[in-house]
Length: 408
Image (cartoon, rainbow, N blue to C red; front, top):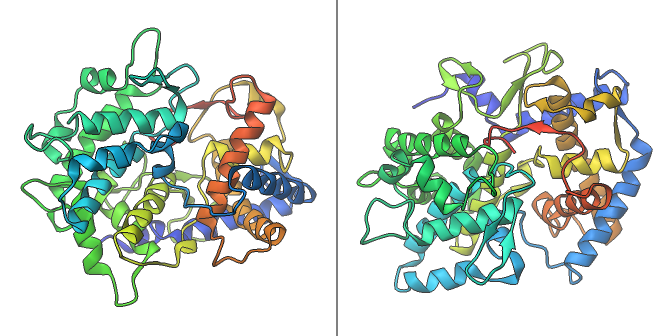
């Protein structure tokens, strides 16, 4: 299946970066409707991130910002324990199982809300991203995503397509006293994922169609030196396009995490459209880690962008790099398509590139040893959470978001 040129353009990470950089230039000219930029505060933000990195990774051995960090929440190596049940599988099939888990877990990761917790058998309680990750891993271990009781530790289209609110809610321990934001939206994502896998046997195979078959598709895309990270993102966006709730379509194709703003590329092509692909890029970082550990080099990881989500974005608001023109917007819930949220996300992506340069300077490292994916992990995401908990008792973001469980 070949995408229309405008659709293909909006799926490229360089388009995300270029269009977000335009918003930063407008902010530098004080020409954005909702945000003012205070560039003199960026150096202080970089120092805060550097301090966070040194606290979290004193030896500066920083991994990628990927889903695999969350599976080890509380210093428990849950994947290794689960991997023992898969002993005897070859390197390729083990990677497919990891991709199976990673895809469903990332798609289930959008904001959980402040009140939800997942409790493990030993009593450990986890919320937000870590809780969602661990809940999805336990669901995977219990065969929630497999249609074959004889082979529970996999993900396949049949199980996803028949996912129910009751089954996912039970796996995530949802109840009146433990509400999970966007549960219905997550179930729709799982069902849509099942349909997407079935629709693209060229990417996800058949009998059964599985997310893990993406490994074979990417192996076919790789050159002798390795696989460009941008190719991972393109494959994810092409294969998973039907997964997203239909927000904006172009040439008959669902664009996913792409939004309208009058200041986005007014000259075209695809004028007025601003792509972020937050979850898809985070999934691409997560898959890059699997591929590299399976002996498949991933090239040009920094071609992917920073992630337009509320931890990174909150960092810039909480440390004063960004300021709302109308402070009242911070007191009311805002929909994902509100122009203030779109501007905030665009500025976040662009500022993360500048922040990464300053953090590398502070640490005496170059882009090869500290790519953006490690700056995010070390890093800006952790620093955004840290400052949020310092400023607000619930550790929530500085802007209140109306989430459907499919973006953040």
